[in-house]
Length: 77
Image (cartoon, rainbow, N blue to C red; front, top):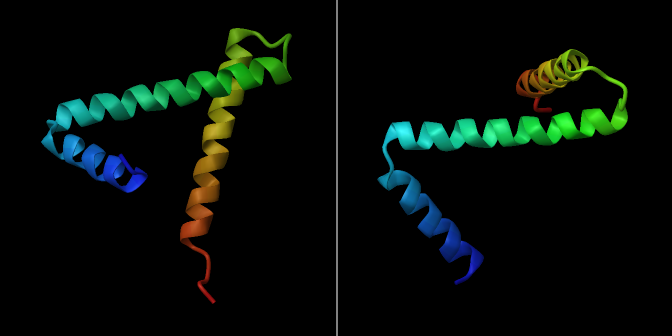
């Protein structure tokens, strides 16, 4: 199967799912990404408490939102 065929098949599978199933996948992916980020934070700050790790994670998420929002408002010229 080519990458293009695999993508087409994946889209077909997503379209066949209920909204609830797609939402669960999205939430699972979000949690997976947060766990990866937490591990990176723990490596960067090995002495950080769980609360500090979560604070760093929230800050990273907020910064990424600011970057995305800034990109949306950039002048296309």
